[in-house]
Length: 354
Image (cartoon, rainbow, N blue to C red; front, side):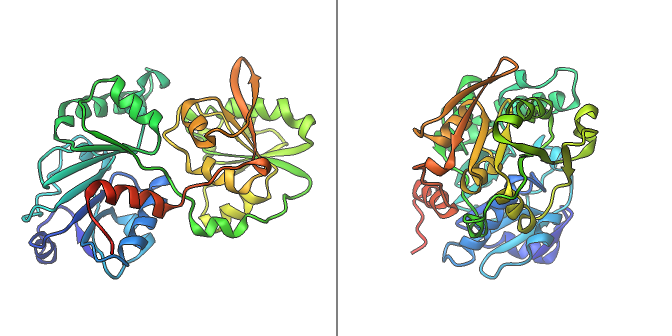
């Protein structure tokens, strides 16, 4: 595992002289759903004859540890600066890899034979979902301009939902081949599928960012509390992002983000999962709730509809906002695993692990 501050260390230079079938640039995000994808890809390609190099943020590389069978370069500098194309951190690649797979960072230079851009964040494609006065709006607007400028270099663009690809098309970012690479259920989560929900019953929600509309989550909880016999709402997120009136309620419990090993049993003990997000690419939390919770209440947005496919749902209107219920106990869904997604990607790349 090579450490890099964009300096051409001897070890990094040696890696740059090798030919890789795929270079995975996962250095854009140190948290959230990307960690699950990174861990799944590292595990898969550590057992594959396909030559791969992973570019990871240092904190992520340290968290996941080295993997035999793959090469890893740790990147330390600002993800936002790299998303704007300010840093030449791919310059050490002296031999063009067959594919560059870039997770959330636009393709700025033709460093590979083929270039694959994965939409990790739908917000640059849907600025109307953000308050125009927010710092995040400015950041995402700048990122959208970079996507527009550099999209011609993309051979393939992928996302975790058809909805995200439709957003990409709507703002006219060119016409590369499009692929849906769905998120997968982590094997460890499935160990909790037979967990009996705790009593008294409670609901759970994950995420407190603006687009999660956590204040509306509280309203949905109140609307269903008596009907479903719920005693409290557990929210996993950051107190700084919580509305004060929700934060100080006696029937609301706030928990800080935690490792999966602690989160999965907590999710499996909940009677109801609630997501009131105004926009999502494809939520890992919702996917895991479909596997582990008896009931989910979801905002009626395209990516949530995609996740439940053709299963029966019950419509629900709260505060004028459309939602739906999905009873997982009656579900016929086949929830995807990560190997499904990776197989789709390799098929498009004309690469084989055999």
